[in-house]
Length: 179
Image 1 (cartoon, rainbow, N blue to C red):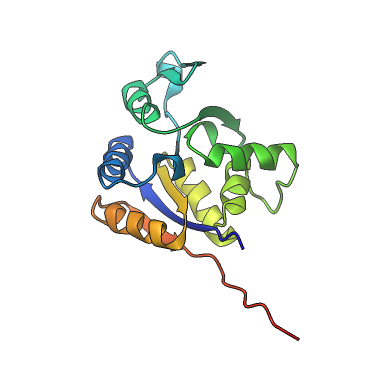
Image 2 (image 1 turned 90 degrees about the horizontal axis):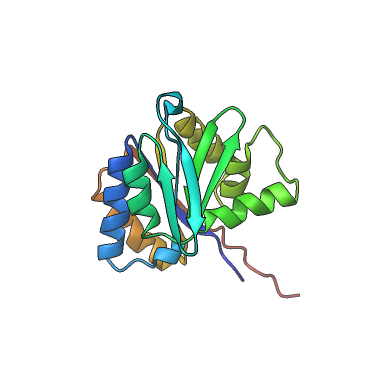
């Protein structure tokens, strides 16, 4: 049975999130299991641009340098304009959960597309609301989504990077009954 395990850390700055990604990479955490979500605030003061050329991404904006270095490490990148949150940059496998939520029109319960993606990843609804609020206040989310043992290993690394908050979301184990 597929189990959805995740650790989600909230960082007050993009620099903190970037340090965590690099620490996870040094610890040997699979980069395919990591996602980062954040927005570039005050875009009216800076040119904002984004393009993807093959496997390389380029982003211009207030935090363009950090996004460029993070996207050089993570797999997949996207830009979404989310009502109530604003322009959001996303890197990593959470993109497929967000797109799946958008394509399947499963967004509901007051969740944004980002929230629906996190919920699809196995994050409980009450935590999703907390993470959407963090994004609205210009914080950055870092997620690792993998087996229970790998997520626990990532949690220990993340703990050392001093996130604003961090929560482990373990899959609920459902015992099958035999009749």
